[in-house]
Length: 166
Image (cartoon, rainbow, N blue to C red):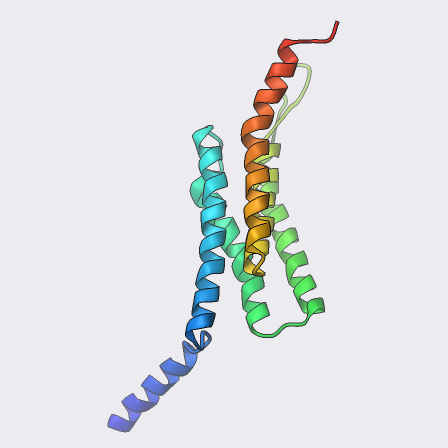
């Protein structure tokens, strides 16, 4: 009976041995937390403005995208394989984004809603991929730019609309 438990324990250790040392654990943790925090920042801004996709959605998209590229990279995938993984993430997030776009056909003109939400989720996935690949500085810079687009651009557009050219 003791040998049986020893075999179970050895098997469990082998199954959870994908993170071999402290540096790898730190790397994985930093990359996934970076993706989560940056996705959360964009999600908070969207939720604060009352949009459908909020903090949890953006965080999950960013973490998921990071994980999709982190695992193959840790397994030693070559550049061509990573390219296919990234293509799959892009295509997959496209389906999620398509679900956020609605067309309202009231009145003479149809009105499309959710394009900015879809684009924001697409950007959040790109930020997650960047963090997952270990490009944290690029991910942070991209988040700041996206936050500027979400927060500053509506104010600029509103200001320009109030002062039409003569």
